Every structure is written in structure tokens, then in C-alpha cells.
Length: 117
Image (cartoon, rainbow, N blue to C red):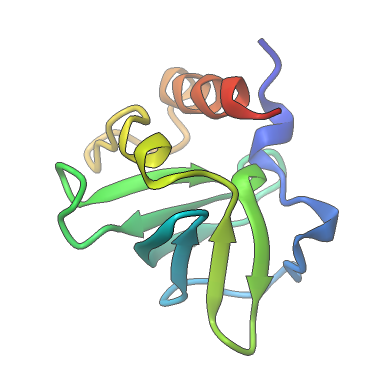
């Protein structure tokens, strides 16, 4: 399954390359998820790590850039086009595993790509 697109910021999201999203609030379609803990915008590997404050086991989730619907730089809010349950059911984030691990990258990418309409 091709998942490269899921790791790219959507052109209509309002994301400006070079903008550091760390500290921004993250909103799912059905409520607040947490805050951006880490952010990466490398080509083909754009992502945010969200600190969920504990509502997800482990407290953090990895979200590919392609699930970001909008970035409100003035309001410091990132909106994602997924529900809280979809985020909660994603492959478990393992902080000891490198985010660029190809197997983990593929697993997370495949999960979110399946949810993309």
C-alpha cells in the first residue's frame, strides 16, 4: 500500500514550511486530543507527536502530516480529520523506537491511509 502521501502536509492545510508546531493544541473532529510535543516536516516524513495527557495508554501518539486538516498559526491550533477513537486505536507509539524506523513508519502510514476517504 502506498503511504507516502499520508506523510505530506496537505496544500490546503495552511501549514507553512518551517513553522514549529510544538506546543500547539491538537483538535480531533470530536474534541481536544492534546498538545504537539514534537514536530517534523521532512519531505515524505512529516509528522507530529501528540502528548495526549494520558487518555491514550503511553500518553503520546504519532500522527502523519496528511491527517492534519488545518493549522491555525495565530490561534496555535492544529486540527486533524480523525476522531479521538481513530487516534486512540492507531499503532502504539513507542518512544524507544525511532520515528524513521521503516517498519513503524509503514505500520502507522498504512493505518491512517486505510482511514482516508
